[in-house]
Amino acid sequence: MKHEVILVTKVFPSTQEKMEADFTVHKLYEAADREAFLKLHAPRVRALATFGPFGADAKLMDALPRLELISHFGVGYDSIDIGAAKQRKVIVTNTPDVLNDCVADTAMSLILNVMRQYPQSENWLRAGKWLAEPGYPLTVSLGGKTLGILGLGRIGEAIAKRAQAFGMKIAYHNRNKKDVPHAYLPDVVSLAKHSDVLLVAAPGGAPTRNIVNAAVLDALGPQGFLVNIARGTLIDEPVLIQYLREKKIAGAGLDVFVKEPAVPPEFFALENAVIYPHVGSATVETRTAMGNLQLENLRLHFAGKPVKTRVV
Ligand code: 8YV
Image 1 (cartoon, rainbow, N blue to C red):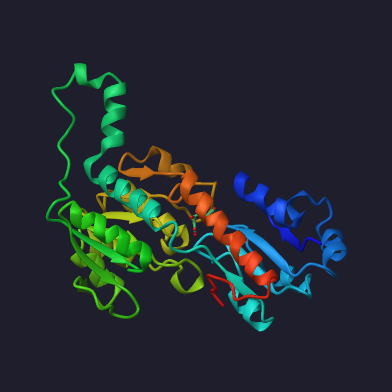
Image 2: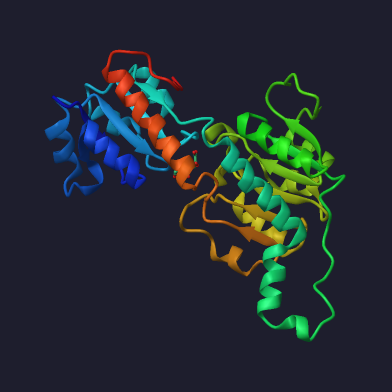
């Protein structure tokens, strides 16, 4: 007999196929009446599969009194109420490590694109401006500049490795100093002051909300660039839009936004913003590996074994 899992939203197709092969999957996102759906399946369901921003709150956990495991697709789990999970002794797993390289590649491309203005220069060429002007305006070199990493975790380290290969110096701020050769700055403002590029790679959620605020952007200054591959919530977005518009910082490279996919249209008009639709981990290989890890945690739990990547 197959174990039963509630899936909160559609996932990567190959992951969903494998999930449906191994488990009886109840699709919450197809339910016309959510409450009736949960009531119907609650007596048998012990696991929930969540995905990115489609997580689980206390209300959903309460609707599933037999819930033992939330197997999340994504390294960031800010869409899950961790306090509520702990209180109810529900295990939460995520999908770390397998995405480090892809997210770091994306970060590096944002650093390159925002400093060297490759997308803007291509648009300039496509608009036929090369025929009228001698060349695209000069930009800024990466070599010798300081990359300040806010949140030097596993993804941050992968970014540091790449940036060093491009000749950048690394500084960082974490709650605790790490045993690494990079310069440690005791707070976000001093990191921003010390950096040419401030890169945000810390977890989202309430404790980090708006930690990149006006004071931090002032410290970064008109020659400084901001790059965010973590969560939109870490940045005070209206303030960032204002600072970009008034050129109080040099530019921003953003893969994430406060409310996705409803990106504030103000960003579309900003020449000094390079924006991606949250593609950090979005390759076939990485999404497959993330899905496999999500499935492995489900299988291990139902086999009575410890899960592989437990958060709480
Ligand atoms: C994914 C992410 O895009 O892992 C994360 O935390 O933000 C991304 O890798 C996301 O999980 C799916 O929406």
